Image 1 (cartoon, rainbow, N blue to C red):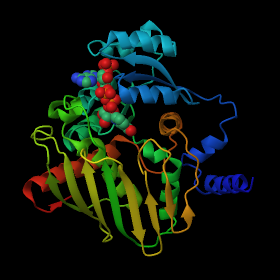
Image 2: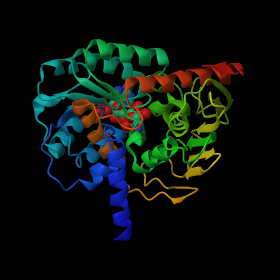
Image 3: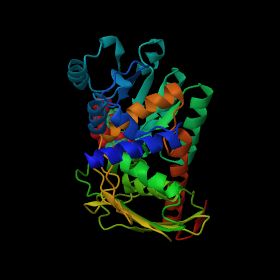
Image 4: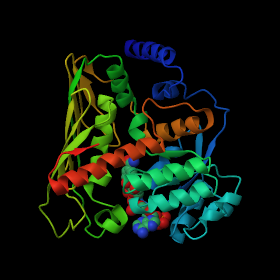
Length: 368
Ligand code: NDP
């Protein structure tokens, strides 16, 4: 009882102090109230492993609903249509999805395909007049990302990137603490992001489809995390690559990269991105007055963490449910999450990835 009361008290304070920000805990507390506002009607493009997870999470959304499918695999469409009660007129393939422009029953397309396909698919969706939610990495380099941003702006549609951690309650709490100065002057961030990748024939290990290796897929969490944990943009990077299996990890597909980033305040980040180690999912932030340690820090959760003040106790809510409800609120009401999820945010990460690849190749310190 006591802890629930504390939770509700904290909730009231956070709601009052930041009224225009999306609050994941507020949504959680209010989840029994009937919702009568607009519903974001979403088509998922790419019915793979993560698309399946997003669709399941959307079953619990109040503000977003899966209403359409774009897929190259007719047998999946049959199964998904039955499962989610999706009309045939809302189903497309990769050849004909430009016709979505004539479909008034779809508001947005969530692109969940291999990385190197995101740019072209996003641009086609934008030109069809629909909002785009695109998975990370939004493209395979910053130039692509910028082109996506510019095209969506010209088409007057929103471009959002699937940064689910920006809606995760413990992460949001840590960012609020950092903004309130609770850690003091920040000095150091460590991000460790990796897993052991299996099947050597999968698209993640094919540069044509992935655009790179572990950095594109999982290292990006440490890059994005360093930025939201420290609250600054890096001004330089250095990087070192290690490859223990050149057959599995071919030219242009990074297995392991250690990288460092320097920030204007003098804070530094030291990070590891890898496809060759398991259970690697840890953030550590240190300041003059306190620290945060999160492990796991970016997996599907529950996220666990503690600060110099004790355990983080915010509830675990399926990340993609929060993300999709939050993105619906962003699209309809301009309610922003505590850290942006727009295309510009995606481009910032890609600029850093470009610089890390350059630093790893040349051995030089690369300025941003
Ligand atoms: P999968 O391989 O499981 O699914 C990708 C789907 O894309 C396929 O099932 C297929 O769907 C479609 N597709 C279209 N063209 C191709 C092609 N040439 N080769 C392979 N698949 C194709 O990948 P994931 O779902 O794991 O990853 C998809 C995206 O989501 C990536 O960008 C990844 O980085 C991101 N992701 C994000 C996560 C997060 O936590 N935010 C977690 C995991 C992934 P269909 O048969 O319907 O056409």
